[in-house]
Length: 335
Image 1 (spheres, rainbow, N blue to C red):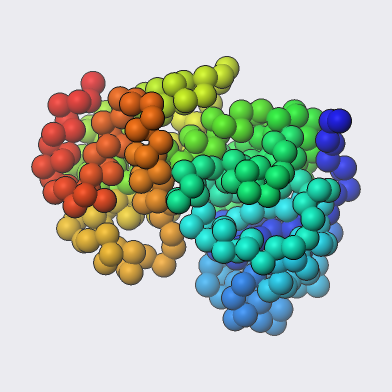
Image 2 (cartoon, rainbow, N blue to C red):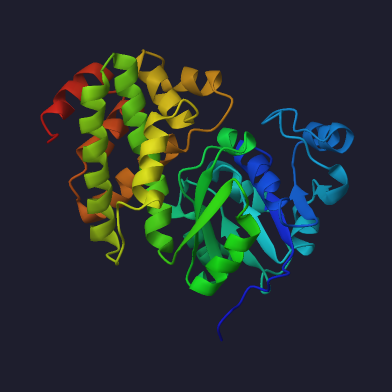
């Protein structure tokens, strides 16, 4: 039987990082109330008292009376029909481990641009495999979107992805506003893996930035990254998709170029000579591309796709290959 999201479906958000905070801001443009799971007591207390997240996007102010905030993931799931997952992929298993609420009547939306590190699967695949949620009750929200610009209400395009286009459009009405334009897709696999791969390529751009490369080389690197991304998806899951669309190419570009890109920042520190461990200590937010690099490397052992950029990033991060020498070698592979 076809699953249809009800237009009056209640929404909840899981997570309290910058993107989760931005999503709550977005949803409150259209929804009267939002349930919000926040693990950290100090953030819960700050929002209740001052309407602000003390750790992320402090300039965003909430009406606390419109938020049902809880540190109990089961309580938040109980209050919602649509649950938006917005925690870093490295923490999603631990976040959902206490979950006992049935998901039979829930629509799960992933806003996570990462991968389950030890299982080498995307969030949609994880929810299907480990929690039995059918793909027709899973959605993705993606696109070129930094939380910091959403906080400033700068125009942003989000792609709503569902197996059923009508469900995607219902989600679009919940996310759309004067500063959020929504577009639609049914390509769950391609959008998720595109978001995973672009973080790896942003790491590569960051590494080269740290090494002192200029815009001319960056343009070549990003163009080759786009070709590499398309090769991966066409080999692993061929489907009708336009790689020039904003959800693929646009997301790649913004993650590679933006000053808000944590993956580019991570890579820049590596290029400047920081170790992976010291970079992780310095950064306060998770760079999804670090975990994605190992997962894509593992997945590609099955397919043997030509991916010299992703391979170079993996060798630098996980095999301690010298960044300078590795990028010089990579130059010969680019066109």
